[in-house]
Amino acid sequence: MKDKGQKTKNKGFTLIEMLVVIGIIAILSGALMIGFGRVTKSAQRAKATELVSQAAQALVILRQKNDGVWPAVLSGNFGGGDGAGRGMVADVAKAFGNSKLLGIAMKGGLPIGISRCGVVDPWAEAVLKRDSNAQIGSAVPSGGTVQDHIIYFAVDDDGDGFTTATVGGQQVNVRAEAIAWCAGADGKIAPYAQRGRSDDIYSWDKAKEKR
Image (tube, rainbow, N blue to C red; front, side, top):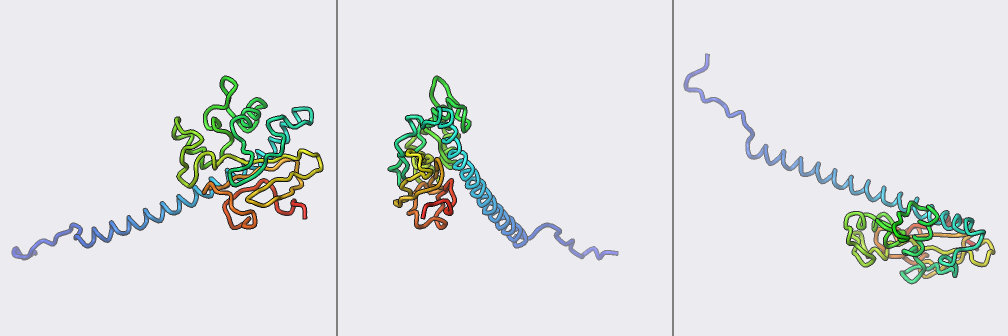
């Protein structure tokens, strides 16, 4: 039998216990956010790698559909980097759209939607999806502008079996009919000598380069 004078213990949480629980929740939430960020970055890079590969293949298909001749919009071997080369801008995207390649949406003979500025990587694509008013000069959160995230390309104009282009300030000769590359999340093409240490993405393996 309880002593009438005995005080009933408080069964609620103390301030310290509440602070400990809040601290644990904050730590777990932070860990989850970091993990989610890493998964998102990995998924975007995988998507960009696939897109660059598909873009190089689409270039070859365009040539095949044009009786084995490079369409005027692709010829001239404009490939380059550091923002000075030939990018898959709206006129190139239009050529893909007319041939039903790369999923380019068209309206009134022009690319629309996420392709309105050209063929862009996933980082710029997210901006164009989110903001219907975003244009070529719109900022991309991971770095650069939409223009910096357009896919670059070059084609084998002379038919020698190699595509020559200036990539990241260095000339490369790749055993391929066409090549494509992009700057990655930061929107900057790094010196090609840093390949493997930068976030740039290429459609070719180094083993295919002419020595």
